[in-house]
Length: 149
Image (tube, rainbow, N blue to C red; front, top):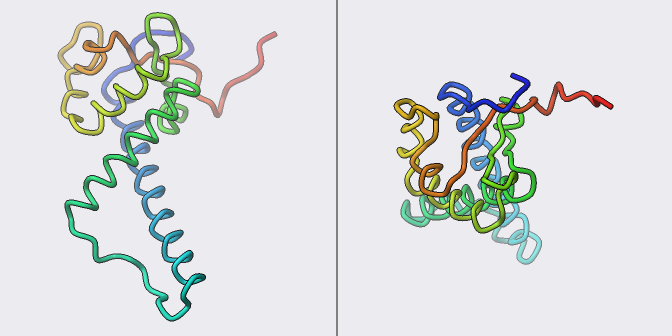
């Protein structure tokens, strides 16, 4: 996997599942954090805010997932799932800029089915990649990276 060839659907799917789990963990942490702040401010109201309308929960999850993806791609070009699977997001000039990272994150959050285009694309690029000029390539997994000086 040491190289820069295009990442396939299996690696990207596993990375995607890890990233969805990361977004779920972040959402859970925010719910617990909100409950703790409420409990500190008024100890009589110690309860988890679990009775949100499904629309609010869905939109909140999509926003949190998009922010997570944008932050990861904007800072280092890879998410936690990408780091585990040895993939990295590339743009024409190398690492994607913040605008590209944010646009791709939003597109991936609201139109995840476009990621399946990798299966039929000869360059293994999703619809989001085609639209924004990005690609997901193999890179060394973060866990096995060695210093080669």
